[in-house]
Amino acid sequence: MKTDVAIIGGGPAGLLLSQLLMRAGISTVVLERQTRPHVLSRIRAGVLEAGTVEVLKAAGVGDRLLREGIPHDNCYLSSDDTLFRINLIEGCGKQVTVYGQTEVTQDLYDAQDAMGATILHEVSDVALHDLTGDAPFVTFRHDGEAKRLECRYIAGCDGFHGVSRPSIPADVRKEFEKVYPFGWLGVLSRTPPATPELIYANHERGFALASMRNPMLSRYYIQVPLTDRVEDWSDDAFWAELLRRFPPDVAASIQTGPSIEKSIAPLRSFVCEPMQWGRLFLCGDAAHIVPPTGAKGLNLAVSDIFYLSRALIAQYADGNGDLLARYGQDALARVWQAMRFSWQLTTLMHRFPDQTGFDRRMQVAELSQLATSPDARRLFSQVYAGLPY
Ligand code: FAS
Ligand code: PHB
Image (cartoon, rainbow, N blue to C red; front, side, top):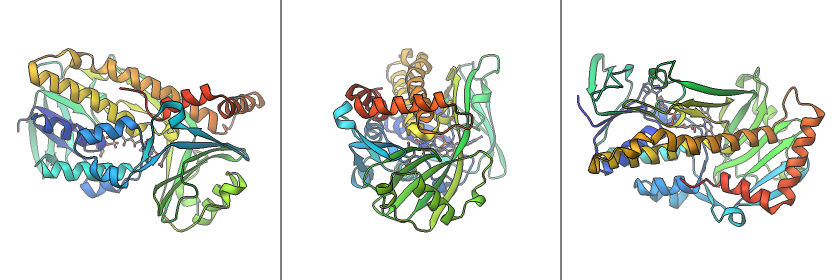
């Protein structure tokens, strides 16, 4: 098998890269470990930055997003029983759009099918070879047979547990990590959202988030200890705890119902430098992980793909390799800004097991500054709605 760009991983990063490159006449093969139904069964991100919407439109997958996505001009923060609004339009003139990652992935699959893309599912034993030469290749197993894919470039879009990042020599990689002492228990329910906009709550019992996917599909999260297992939480126990963490008038508007999905996700901040090694380019969760607090995970995957697709298209169009040579530098500059925002909002909105009275006063002071200072809200808005690429 031969292709221009081998893409390891068929999540949103891999599918979006394949879509953008194929539209520019560059051939791709996507190698995905799971089945398509498994990939589409994942419930993950829910908020798209303004820049992400533009990239998806440029990739030809914006139609349903523009029809069904819910634009949001504001988000709310609460601290115990006080609630205040952050007006994103006043802060930075940009909206965010609520549209689930599952829908983004479905739209990408549909577009890739229409383009006749080569997406191989249930591949195994993927290994990357000759990354520092000019003829890298990938070996893997598919349909019970050993395969070899010759290519010019390899995009590592295989997430945090993939094979791409470890293919960069350990003595070359610098990894930065912070693991948080709690997780998020998330529930999806076929109930109308409590409020039209998202509410992030800092409560003495812990963090909570009220979000949604559409007018009849709500998404809620509560901070839980790392020792909790999802089977420890009945629906009734979840709803009772969630209602305790929002101001009374918000809690009164929450409609409870059976969970159709319930899961616990750990929280970590992680960055791998460099994001490129020879002909291998890391994108999305393969290179970095943010705590979901800032809604940056999927959006960072999209900005990585924006930089890498632009660089590969320039390379193929007129042999100009400048953008390709600086892909990691360009991507990391934006990654670290989103990393800082996600860490800061996680630190601000959660109750830490070893939190001191001073730490709590710092949270109160920062929340008070956000509630009273238009400049503080402006800076928050600029990063929340998405820094420019
Ligand atoms: P993905 O992990 O989505 O995709 C990688 C793909 O590579 C997967 O399909 C995997 O099967 C495949 N793969 C792995 N190893 C392979 C191999 N060896 N060979 C071939 N294929 C391989 N972000 C938010 O913004 N908000 C949220 O609320 C949020 N919640 C999350 C909850 C969970 C449990 C997780 C894990 C992540 C969450 N995220 C959230 C972040 C998430 O949305 C990611 O940022 C996003 O999926 C990144 O997309 P990809 O980089 O494509 O990685
Ligand atoms: C979600 O709806 O899943 C969501 C929204 C905002 C976040 C995190 C998750 O910050």
